[in-house]
Image 1 (cartoon, rainbow, N blue to C red):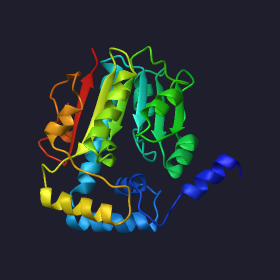
Image 2: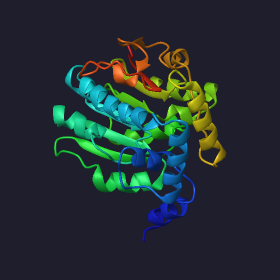
Image 3: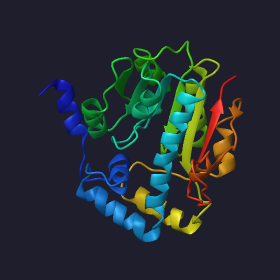
Image 4: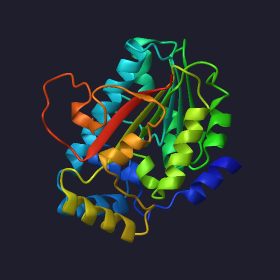
Length: 266
């Protein structure tokens, strides 16, 4: 076993639920432990619609990456807070449109990094890389990602279901501002984030349960607060909306707790 692998093994705590593994469970995956399944069961008891919301966010990922690659002409993607590999991973969607697309995945969970390196492979024309870093260290993320991405050319920054893990608003804004500052005009910022718009009481109870179990704390933000992350960018239509209603491929009037938005840097 390499020194790096040994360090990752030490970091892998299977006794405490982890968001990536819990999300994997809710999406029907196989990469989770008893603590993750127990946490999911408790969350579903107070907020049964969480599975629908998680899947809607995953569907949004596919639509927005397809839009950015096919219509906006983006060829570089920085996916931070990747989570465990599932269907329609960012590089698969982007490279299906443009095989030369380059994608860097960022996460700080050893299980995620291990699976990503094994499963998230690239087309011969493009590139896929995996960075072991924390969102709270944007400069380190950019430095590592620059080995694969050209930060003189447009980059799409994907922050799907990850900003809610920075509960301090000032820090969250600083992180986003630093990431946006690192990319040139023509780059995009994509955010999805839980809100209290659908079932405020259920979400509050779910957040309390999650935070009280010793997991990395999370928070919800209002659509207005989410829109504030796009300050200085041009927010694309239809603005900050529930994930099912961002340029849906079919008529979809369902509202889910996760809201999203996409902005472009001019």
